[in-house]
Image (cartoon, rainbow, N blue to C red; front, side, top):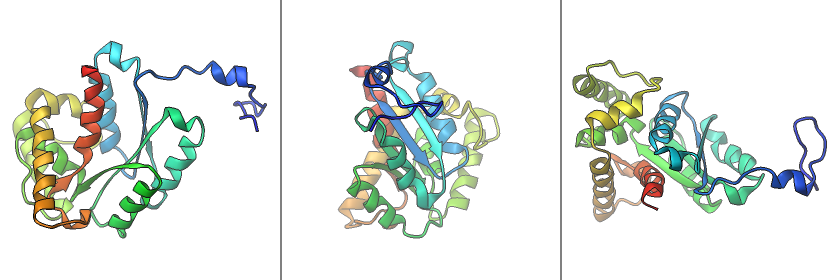
Length: 215
């Protein structure tokens, strides 16, 4: 059955072909937060070289935790082959954290999770990923470090967040730290993401996107 356009009319095969497919991929990132991940990944996209930015799409969609997977599948149902689906969310107080991750993987959705929160990933830009167990303390401590490094208050809704992190921090080192923490947890016999703390897999998504530059 043909897809409908905005007016409700059926689209012909020729009309659908007019949509330009981004050469380096269409990343769909579905998250359950109001601002942090959107500001971070929007900033990441804007920081890419123009010739890369024009060939790669990053779309961030916000929804409730329990609907992230359904929202991802709903959006990728249209021209699914052109989208690279991810869900990005925190351990925080999420019920069924491990189960959500497993379900996403079963449905071919990649997961960028953080334990205890997204800030533990951004912490790595400053050369460390401290052993903090709860999200409130993590956000609070990160905020103090962020202010000492940037000279500005930390805001989850700061559109310049990514730019500031990269200016005073080290992204390559952050990826290395995240990789080491993940491997350390695995060596310690921890298999469930809820048991891995501090830990994250957001670096896998960031590294993949930044790898497009080298291509």
